[in-house]
Length: 130
Length: 130
DNA sequence: TCTTGACTTGGAGTTAACTCCAAGTTGTAG
DNA sequence: CTACAACTTGGAGTTAACTCCAAGTCAAGA
Image 1 (cartoon, rainbow over the protein chains, first blue to last red):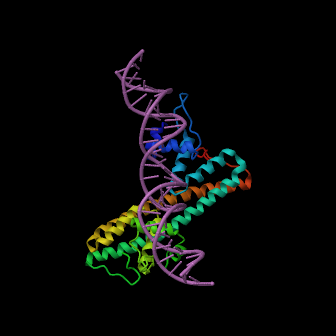
Image 2 (cartoon, helix red, strand yellow):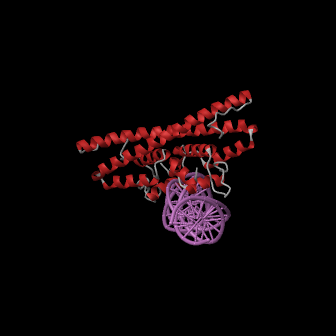
Image 3 (tube, rainbow over the protein chains, first blue to last red):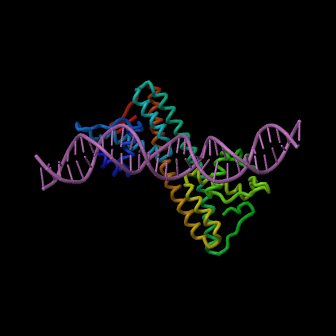
């Protein structure tokens, strides 16, 4: 698969794909004899994971560390497990904050919709902040 | 409440609080006659909301827009409602991605824990990517 | 009143994560 | 064989969101 096909498949730019490879977010991609990237199943799996974890706010630095450990072989399985567990905790933590914000948003939207119907915004003492 | 008390209460730096005010993420804070910030209930409510929505990935730009609309008065209630709904959608969207990443992480962690017990990492054909 | 530490401002600097660029190479269609 | 688009690299530039700094002001304790 060419870089173009991969970036179309995942809706990501070729520059980002090359950047991920350059800094080590994914291991080096398979090349044609001429030196052009030719993504194999495994390369694509790494890309997919990288995008998935980045979308969940996992820092590039952490992904680089994971790939580095992976390339050092089986002796790093403990370290990799710990890293994944740490990532899991921060994602759970972040998601909790998303839920809090959603609750707040739903409440505010509810109040605004009442205001739209009645033409009046009614605030309690604690919420003079829109 | 002084800026110090507010930043201790929310575990945020004074620089960030001043930055939020400067760019309009929150409205101008009440001051003492000498010009020093003296956060009132309402100021604090704005700070709390700003932090909450920022923690959910809402861009500063969007918060600025909201405050701007708020300050324009009741005629912007529709616009504010739409903005909040838009924010809600992106937060839901983002949370979906967090859930996908968590699922992937849990699967990987499970595999690694088996590997730690047995000393062997077993991969299926599709997951040669650590 | 003096000192000392916290506060003020405008503006410059930093960080993470891309994003763009120039100059050169590869590969396919005609 | 010749265009010519798509690829390559190293490095520079951009963006969002802070974060730091210098020079000056304010305020509480001795």
